[in-house]
Image 1 (cartoon, rainbow, N blue to C red):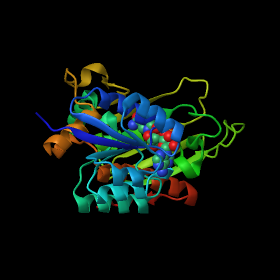
Image 2 (cartoon, helix red, strand yellow; image 1 turned 135 degrees about the horizontal axis):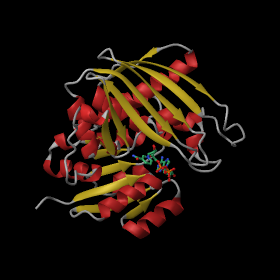
Image 3 (cartoon, protein in one colour; image 1 turned 30 degrees about the horizontal axis):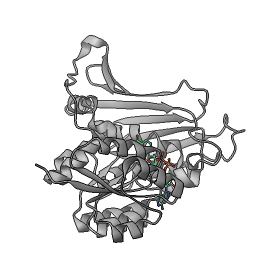
Image 4 (cartoon, protein in one colour; image 1 turned 45 degrees about the vertical axis):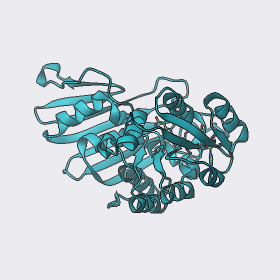
Length: 329
Ligand SMILES: NC(=O)c1ccc[n+]([C@@H]2O[C@H](COP(=O)([O-])OP(=O)(O)OC[C@H]3O[C@@H](n4cnc5c(N)ncnc54)[C@H](O)[C@@H]3O)[C@@H](O)[C@H]2O)c1
């Protein structure tokens, strides 16, 4: 019988509630305490999931016996909380993108490394059978180019942090980070980026300072090239996402939400395993219970590498020049 894992949360907004729902259904997980600077929000979450309510994470860390803490914070709010938690020996689940600026991420990564705690970043796409199959298939193939788009609208109203560049880092950094991370996971490291962006369509949207269109070129360590385009202009719907890998054998691997296929169909076969893979929450909790870190597919260190690429892309658009993605080691 595995031991019960005592979990706390910092941030109890949208994504926190989805993790809380998953954890509430798992055996041997005790939701011990929740914290949010929005008192009404944390009280509502405690009413549904139990635990003690806090508006100050320092008090929660001092007063509650925890094994692990979920950080479900907007990009701009990641900083001291993770450093304090890691230094105290709590295992960390951190939502993507892990940080808005690199120096803070490096300080958090160093504390995690020093304390030896388990860390997991919320790139849940890595835990699907499709991701495993695509990664395995591409492992020994030559990739020439990766082409990706993620197009959508603008979540939240005028006061939402997502539409403010200084708070979210924009669509590539905040949302298309899932696609960027999956590209790193399946096609290897990106060493240089150059982004151009525009604001042409959403001009009448209040408090909207992120670009509504971005195109970033990617130079891979392998020598392959690629690009990601994002749009936040589809506010009436109709968005979507897909990544195409042009590979040896003159065919394309198309990776979409939860599916992968080869074009032309008869050029090769990708075997996607049947059966339910471990969810990201199950993987994190089981890694804590068993000490098996191989269950985690994106540690903080790895998540920081994905954030570093889009941070470099934002720098490149600001400086109108290609920028090397910083080596995180
Ligand atoms: N993995 C995924 O698929 C996925 C999906 C949605 C969101 N996310 C990510 O999760 C993060 C949070 O997104 P969200 O939609 O839950 O945002 P949200 O705005 O709904 O919730 C964030 C919460 O953090 C709280 N908060 C801010 N600073 C705090 C602090 N210092 N201490 C305690 N609480 C604080 C806010 O009051 C708010 O309730 C974002 O980075 C987002 O990209 C990931």
